[in-house]
Image (cartoon, rainbow, N blue to C red; front, side, top):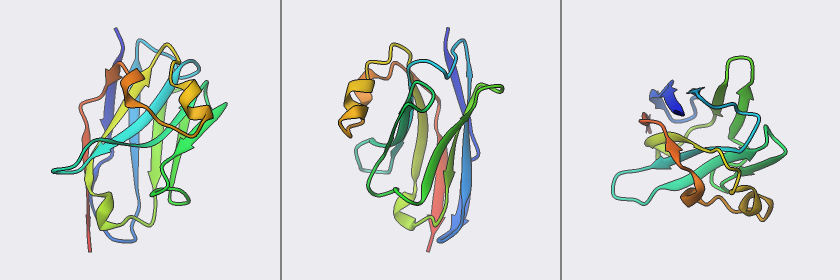
Length: 131
């Protein structure tokens, strides 16, 4: 059974930084796709960043390019999202997710992040950025 547990959320002022972590059990990050998604109040869930095959393919939403970095520590089986230059519009609940079958790789290769392929989700962690 795959379980994902996020941590690292919190409140920060605009321009600040946070690092989110996603610890996985029952699954290895070397295979499939791993991603970060977020959902702000009253808005649809959106893909933020993802990678396939431990980094063979990587995706970032335009809104976070140059500010967020997705990475993994294979030894700890943990994925990270380093967020810098945070803006109030980054305020949301952030979720990590796993597509253990790797179906998302086709979309990533074409610059798309499709959440329908992700079958395992964490519980979410709140990120609040104040102006």
